[in-house]
Length: 276
Ligand code: SF4
Image (cartoon, rainbow, N blue to C red):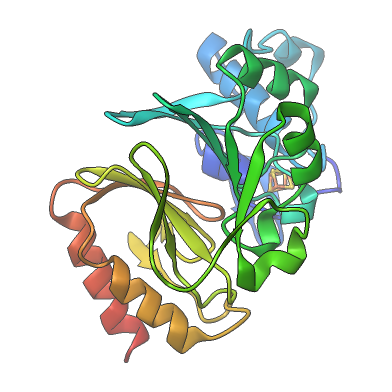
């Protein structure tokens, strides 16, 4: 590890077997061993937005054959992948790829990467890019240009991506692809939106509205990281309580899988906590 780390969390969220936080930086607490572990560590190295992770010549032999995107889960409406190649412009935010039956959708944007673009092209290209809020737009111009695809952002955050072709307005949900809907969840920013894949055992892409804290095993709706209106953010969380979510895939913080019935309990616990 060199001195460039910005403490974005990308490496230890992706590969907690080898990386961990340590005050204001990350550290390697265990060296990888075996092919699979080497590949995971190499992917974490690729994902790091500031090239802070260094590999020895021996560990470089574990270079993964395909790299990102890596598969996360299957849903009847599509396959879901993590894109890696985090961008410093979005403080290492995660971006996700939905490979759906009616085309592929990128949720938030990684840094521009020709190898990642080649992989996505081989998987069918991109039909649309969803920008969940103003902070995580990263290299959206390059991705949109490379794939000739349109971008969607809420009009309240549109100044962060003024070239976006589609603006979501108001607070009503809107379908943008088969099984994929956008839910306005203002609060963290005025134009924050979540994307929901499916209705039962759904996958929720929550941007910075909501994430999982693995140490405390709780959903986090953070006032400390709220840039617009925390009361609105709480109201937006209430809107999500009735959903049937299996996977939570945020831009920052840990992802999490919920067993049946756990989602609602977790949202209620967080609502109790933030409403005092
Ligand atoms: S991914 Fe890179 S910048 Fe982010 S915490 Fe790890 S080493 Fe630091």
